[in-house]
Length: 341
Figure 1 (tube, rainbow, N blue to C red):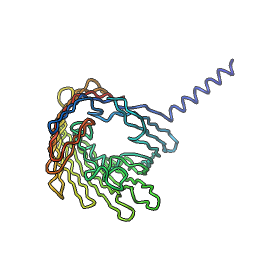
Figure 2 (tube, rainbow, N blue to C red):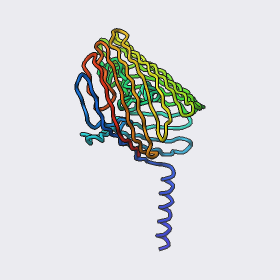
Figure 3 (spheres, rainbow, N blue to C red):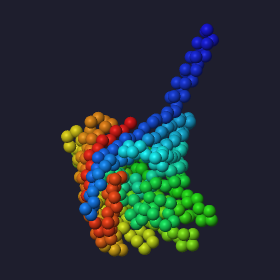
Figure 4 (tube, one colour):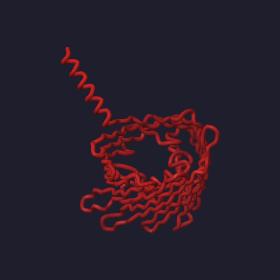
């Protein structure tokens, strides 16, 4: 009996030691709203997925390897709360990392550096009626690219993130095209450098996405700069972005505001999309409010209107949004609930 007790104690100690040096976390967001959109006399009403934050399910973990070195993984996939979805895959992020005083070396599928600025410096991020929808401004299906002229995410990627250096932060990333006979086609390279200290956060991003054909390649170049400054309960935000390539150029200008109000937050944003090669411009105004029921649960509402000029047919970022006819406006509103876990 004594030997058995000693064995059990040793096993418990080993288990406790293992738990102290590694961890795995289940996390996610469940977000759904009742939405209504109207364009060209046509109305769409129903449940929209991810009106305040993209619904997701994920697993992440870190293991202490000793000597200041850690290994980590992150597996995250989108889910549809409105209809349950038709399948699940880790399409949002699937990475494995080595972390230490040198920073982080990350391999796999992840967000592009330029897209991080679009999310960070906009009052609504990139979801719901007010979402900026500012990636792949030239084309979401640009010929020869993996996922558009300046996509949200890159697969087959390797990236390096700076360690904590005061308020300085940054990242460089490269996605391999993995095309036989032409390793540059469908590839992408990007960087982001920023500074955050106290109320100020400012960052610049730049990326090149390779498209076209093996015989006639095209470089789509994207750049953006964003800034926010917290003044008590007010946080004004500014974002400027531009994409160029294949004879096209589209610029984006956005100003926004987050303001503490009651037990929640008021959000407002105005965004201008300018097609420099034509008059196919668009303007979007959005206003919303989120009321916190707890640290993890929020009720929210938003209303937005997007006006298209010329041949422009941009749509709202809501998952329920139809694509309007060329030159036609679209209006939408939603009321929903978001729960994080």
